[in-house]
Image (cartoon, rainbow, N blue to C red; front, side, top):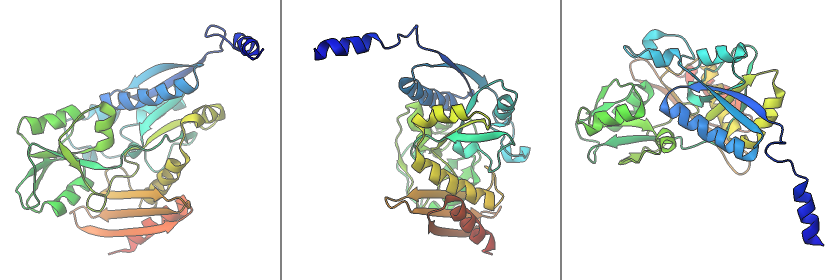
Length: 311
């Protein structure tokens, strides 16, 4: 009898052809890393919600187009997502998937972040041809002032070489001997499936960028149905640390070019601990703070205020 009821129940389930299909237009950058991380997230969503039919819209952003000069020379905020947000507002896509560290502290009116999947590694990784020591003379490539300023504390004799390009291009500079080392986000290497010889830099010596290793899904504020849809891939702990770090960025009125770092962790009791640091344009550490609390926005505001008050 049990077997017969089970068979009947199964036969009443909708087949793939009977299931109502939900078409979902997804916008993301064209880079290999952006594609890999966005596709991995949507594959997880589709496994949990097989009625979703993704339609990809790959978008070239201002940050992708500018290759002849440092991005901080271009100016403005949101250089890696402005065109994607414009597509959202124009109803050309339903959702956008971003690297959390590319998102400015303030979103355009009418848009909201509706989901943050579980954070990947927040660490930076130093990739070098050979083992390196603090006393060595090194030429290290990075396009990030945050990384560069912290590297000069780790390696006082290092020369920092401005470097842009995709992950493979940056690693190629080391393999071909043009650089002794490069610094990359460990999460990006993992998402691309790249194996490397290198060591993750400890948080005590290389504090990461705001939301490093975090993805965020953005949609029009009117689409509560999409917030509900993405709930199955949303991680509440990541959301809280993400909000705390972004609140710190907002408090100092920073952007992705500001030499600034922030990293929040949530403990079992729900308490958040946030570390943040700010440098001046010359590479001098303006201040480093650690704050604890339960409210992400209040925590970020406190950390940012303390950093700005330090001489």
